[in-house]
Amino acid sequence: MSDVKTIQNLIGGQELDAIAGATIENTSPTRGQVIARIPRSQKADMAAAISAAKTAFRGEWSQWSRLERADLLDAIADKIDAHKDELAKLESLDNGKPIKLALAVDIPRAAANFRFFAGAIRHDKTDCHSMPGAINYTVRKAIGVAGLITPWNLPLYLLTWKIAPALAMGNTVVAKPSELTPMTAARLGQLIHELEIPPGVVNIVHGLGAEAGQALVEHPDVSLISFTGGTVTGRAVAATAAPQFKKLSLELGGKNPTIVFADANFDDAVEGSLRAGFLNQGQICLCGSRILVEESIADRFEAALIAKAKEMKVGDPSNPKTDVGALISTAHREKVESYIELGRKEGGTIACGGNRPDLGDALNSGAYLNPTIITGLGSHCRAATEEIFGPVVSVHRFKDEEEALAMANGVRYGLCASVWTENLSRAHRVSAKLDTGMVWVNTWLLRDLRVPFGGMKESGVGREGGRYSLEFFSESRNICIKL
Ligand code: NAD
Image 1 (tube, rainbow, N blue to C red):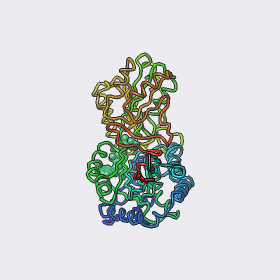
Image 2 (image 1 turned 180 degrees about the horizontal axis):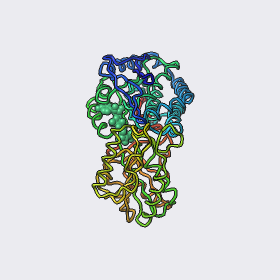
Image 3 (image 1 turned 90 degrees about the vertical axis):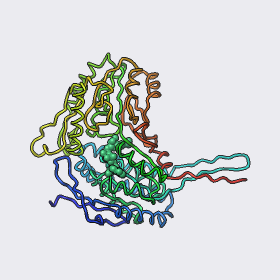
Image 4 (image 1 turned 45 degrees about the vertical axis):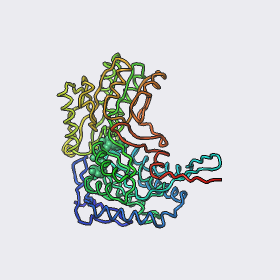
């Protein structure tokens, strides 16, 4: 019992239990053990946090210059770096992801998010339009209280991707992290408050989406909602926020194609498809869960991919050699398994995986699943078009470019795609015709934080990243002066 942490809300600079006293158990998917209790916050807790954020927005914080805010963001990044090992361990335990991934990606990226937006506001510029007899200049104004809602797959990485630009532009924030992964958010709140920051600028409220999340979205004093999560939830968030004309950014689900042409560098394409399929147990919105391969190389490609997938080391996330850790929960694993079964029923062959590894008594109560490859499935099947969000990919064969594009675009989602070809003209041509917000050519998940990030169709609305985030987290205002 002593290992069970008590996590509290951070409201107005104070750590508090939920007003009604209710809690939720937080279970680690690594061994199925309870690791923390978090507040089960309700409307009253959210109202207190929003009120603290509103007061802070009007107070001393509004006097902070852009350069002072940039220095604060850098100081937060330094704190994250200084606690990198601790945060990586918490993230791995809470989420089930391999420690080596948390150390190489999640935590460094969280620090990088703060440093990036510190630099962005130091070097930001706005427009000036001169016209006969007048000049116009554009200024960006902080909006107020920003409501930030994040999922469990990249807990600190995505939370900081929102907190950093929100603070950079002078807003105050109320964040609602996923109830499944509260640990690093809570620790970040503590680390931020070791710095000189007015109380109420950063508030973190834990709880269930339908309770705490909904209360945040519907509150009239929250002028902006940045939401990352599933498409169904995004639709509910939009339905609540839109009638109040809140500024809204929705980063939602994906069913992203990896398109491999016969002229691709074969080994790179196999390696890239494997990484895109299974990184973070396939639980990244950008994962390439549909692999489309040109017919002439398909047999060889499938054989190579299957061989590599079988080599991946599934197991204890705290082991630095582990490639594939635990899924977020046993309930989520059941959902993923139901899709594997559906794929089988829809005519697919489970070419590898599809089952749980035997990792011994200590780990068998965790949420592990072997990397799974489904072949021979029609590209319109449900298992091939719905987001599974686990270590499952389906491989489909195409005859030519036209058919590849029809398959790639034939889903409701439009987040990203990766294209593998050595033909430069084809790379440009195919990229232009893909209905996705992002395209990678001969790579996947290579991120420059300045570029627009976001999806088309049911993968979301709006863009974050670089100046797109600065614009989203502020109001651009024009001032016209007659000369
Ligand atoms: P989810 O939609 O279940 O939950 C996301 C967050 O929303 C959680 O904090 C949850 O508590 C909260 N929430 C739930 N119901 C709510 C409501 N009615 N009002 C307000 N908030 C509510 O998503 P998840 O299962 O945590 O995450 C997985 C999904 O996120 C996948 O679909 C994945 O593709 C998507 N995702 C998208 C991106 C992107 O950038 N496009 C990035 C990561 C994850």
